[in-house]
Length: 297
Image (cartoon, rainbow, N blue to C red; front, side, top):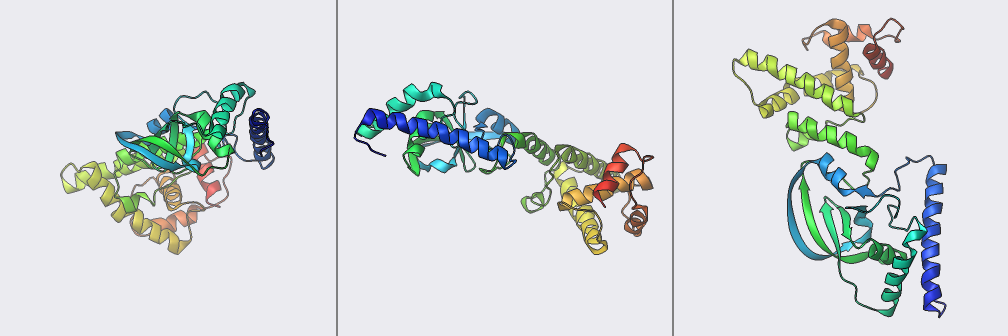
């Protein structure tokens, strides 16, 4: 909005963006969304969770503003995830940049790190905020790309990072091919660790059976084709495993087999024997059995 009074216009623009940040935060609470849905992602924590592999300079590029979701070193609570100012302490610098922008003064490219399709601001937070407030869809940026072991998209939230870290460690312990990796998904981080331990035990027994030490990659591929896929086919046919992803269903049944049948075998009849064990959980069950039976109802 242009009133003809530039100084008042930029003051009004800052106040409007500050108000929008507060209203967006209130709306998220009323919708019962996660507390961190509007929180900027912290660069170092994201890279640590995903596993840094390498880095390269991509030079100056024009990047979409909606891809900027995080910060390298900005203090939490200064901007929200949409780079609206969240505190009045930013007013002075924000208004100076907005005034320069209105005058047509040249502004240097911002500096960002790219991780997947996300960008993290190292320098230029106020410029990003002003650009978004003025309706821009993109901005000029000097980009450094960071390659990571695990991918992530712009829906990532700070509370997702522990799960991502466990997913990365799982795939380091169990290096599956890409197509197989996509089928191993959990919503709880402990399940990644539990499944990795089961697979490593399975691989140890397989190495003894084949009378040679198998590599992690050999164990991973053998487990996927010789255990996971056949068991999932049997579970689909029997309608067992409960809700959730394939990996969640497999892990429930594998753990119930170990806890109730005291075997690590998947021979014929195991699925039917497990079907016979399905019942409402009771107070006599240990914590893990109780939880698994509850999830399989």
